[in-house]
Each structure stands twice: as C-alpha cells, then as structure tokens.
Length: 572
Image 1 (tube, rainbow, N blue to C red):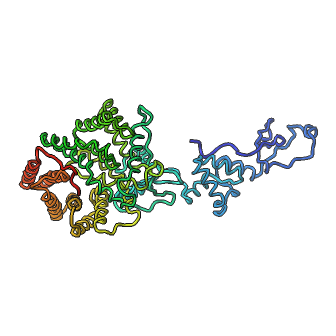
Image 2 (tube, rainbow, N blue to C red):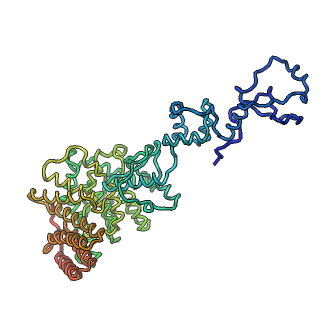
Image 3 (tube, one colour):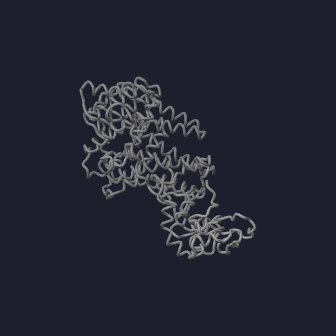
C-alpha cells in the first residue's frame, strides 16, 4: 500500500523563468529551486533575456516565499488541511456522484481518486475524504458488525426457504472471504436474537439461480448439458395441462407406474440394507420390470425422482444395475434421442470413474438442475416449483441426509404461492402439505408455523373422502418432529417428559396405520417404527424400545416374499 501522505507536489507546472530561494540560504552560491503552482508564480516581466543575464547571480536577493506559498506546498505534501481546502457539505454533495463512481464503482484507490479530483479543481485531504466516506457510508471492506448482521439475516431467510446474497455499492459481498481471512467460521459469529438492521450501503437480495457450468465430456454435449436438454424436452411435453395448480402435478405423479417402479427399487435397497435379501430381491425384480417406462412414458418428474433415488441409495450394486439396464435397453431397442444418449453416457461415466466421483457428479448435476434459471435455459415458466414435492418423497431410511437436505434447501417456497391460491379443500390440502414438507425440512421442524400447518392439514383431511393417508402421515410426522425438537431444547424435566410423550404419541399413530398389512407405497412407515424404537431407547424407556423393535420385525414378516405389484400401480 502507498502512504496516504505523499512528498511530491502534484499538478504544479515548473516555470523555468522563476527561481525561488529558500529563506535564510542567501550565502549558498547555487539556489535551491522550488516549483510553485502557476497561479502562485510571480507575473512575467517585460525584461529581455539579455537584461536578466546582466545581473550577477551572487548579487540577486533571495526570494523569501510568503506564508501562503509555504502553506500550499506543505499541505500538498502532508495531506494536512489548508483553509482553502475546507468545503461545506453542499460542496461535497455536488461531487458525491463522481467520487462514488471512482472509488466504489471503478474501485480506484483513494490516492488515485484524490489526484483525479484535484485535476477537476477539487482539493481535499485524506482525512477529509475518510471523514466524508464515513458519513456517506462509502466502504469497501467488511466489518465484524456488518458480517454478524448479514449472517443473522441469512439464517432467518434460510429458515423460510429463501436463498440470500448481499450487495454493497452494487457488488456482491463475499462473506466467505472475510471468514477465511479471519480464520473463523460463521458459527464463531453466531449471536442470538433477531437480525439487526443492515447498514444503508448493504442490500439483501434473493440471488438468481446459478447457471450450470459445463462439464467437459466426450461427445458434442457434456452429460450435464444432456441432463438440461432432457429436462427441457420433458418439461415441454406437458405431464399435466399447463393451467394445473403447481403442486397438483406432483400429486398426479404419485399414481404414475414409473413412480411405482422407482419406489419398488427404493424399498428393495432398504430391505437389502436390513438383511431381507429374499424380499428385497422380489421387490427389486418388480421395479426393474417397469423401469423401461423411463423411455415409454418419460416425464421430468420421473427423471428427477430417479436421480435423487440413486443419490440416496445404500447399495452400489443397485445403482450400477439401474444405469447399466437403461443403457442396454436404449441400445437393444434402438431408442434414439437425448434421453438414450444421457443414460448411455452416465453408464459410461460410471464404468470409467470411481463410485465416489460418479456420485459427486450426479449430485452436482441434480443440484444445478434445481437452481437453473428457467427463462435463460428454455424451460417453461414455473418448472422448478412443480418439481419441489418430488424432493420430499418419503423413504424408509435416508442414508445421506445432509446432501439430501441440501437439495431440499434449494426449494424456494415463495414461488409456490405465486398466482391464485387453491380453493377446493383437496387442492388446498395438497398445497398446505407441500408447504409443511418444505418448511419443516428446511427449518428442522422448528417454529410455530410448522405446528399450525400440521394441525391445519389434519383438520382438512376430515373433509376429504379418500386418499388422505399420505397427508395424515405428513402432518403427524411434522408434529412428532416438532415436539422432539422441544424435548431436545428443554432443560426442564417436566417439559422434556411432556414433549417426549407427545413426540412418541404421534409416531405411534403413524406406525398403527401400516401394522398388520403391507402397502409398497407406504414402505416408509417401517422407517418410522425404527425411529420410534430409537426415541424410546434414547429416553431410557427400554421396555417400549424393545416392544417397538418387535413390532418392526413383525412388519417385515408381513412383506410377501413373492411380491407382485398390480399392473397399474397404486394410486393415491
């Protein structure tokens, strides 16, 4: 960094006709020349060069600078204020826009800004500039107070499903760079309470979705570009009429045969993980029998469902077989088009890379798809909010909860409430249940909004004649997790006991729905029995924990070893 105080006199033009002797140096034969400003130079005389040459240099009287001469030189060199440089607030305001452009928008150093403004006839010292910057809020750097305020706002917006970016003077603020420079994490700056008001020079914005970056791969298009192309093609091949309410499309997908096939494979993956190989094998076989519907009845919902299924699978063998089967089907049946090239490309990628590298690639592709800007990518308007419910399809066990939750955090709930709200009780319940899923997962089931929504959905189901099991499950699960959170936060023994009883009470209600029979589309309820056992055991209620484990084993035995799904699936 250059010093704020310079030892040169800027913008002063030498006058070769003027020599100024420094005071009290008359005995020195060679004068020391000091350049003065043109406006301070003595007026030119009419003497000819020969006239000046006739005067002996030693006989010349030293010219003693006036006080104003020396003050001008001194203030220019040191940055100290000169009386003539004092400006009123009104004068500063007339130059504010120009200074802002130079200092903030063009990101010039203060020294350079001062030099440019001097050329325009405006002179002020470093101290004056900095004082004025404080009043104007002109700042290029993050302060600890600003970062704390930004993190508080960011956390609160995240709790309601909003992504956040901060801009200072028209440029995005890099909070991560500040934390890295200080060697701390955002958790070191956590402060309780609501966010303070942001400084005037900081703006909070919802950032535009990131554009997918190209991943270079063999062929004309990268695999990631192929995923986007397939998503675009499938989205324009309307699954539901364009005027269908946003969340209703995903509700229609619940009855899709392809959804049933992917669900069977998901159930098989879980059964293999708990040692039920025979039942898992039968379930897996049923799923693969209908997997070709990815080609026969493709939809953007099926594509996303398949991607998130393989991301959360525990059995690598099943994942490899899915892509091998789809690639082989495309080659054998001679299916052509982007979807066939995509599946063949993914299989080729999986065959030539480590599984972890493959998983990272699929995760990145899926995440980019969820944040892509529709208008710039050729997707129909509101494509992404129509897909949000697919991210919350329940499963018996979530093996990669953190990455899965990261994908769920990409949902922007505010996009679901654009346009007219549904009025029919059935559509309204679907809408509220979707909000509950998004809000609950993104806030870890915290907040009074979760509690109120869950009870509202339960009340609404009383007015619906059929197919309410899934909505009841969502509401009861939300209430169970809500009270579980209160149990974990409280230190009061009575409050803890009350919330533990309530959380397990709601899980008991969920478990009772599926005991005694097997519904392949509600296999996730078996996972709730496992959760119930864990909560009892953690609270020290060993007898109830053992009883829950026995119920879980009995539920497994209720799954037929020769499972065959109906031709049209089960519609909910």
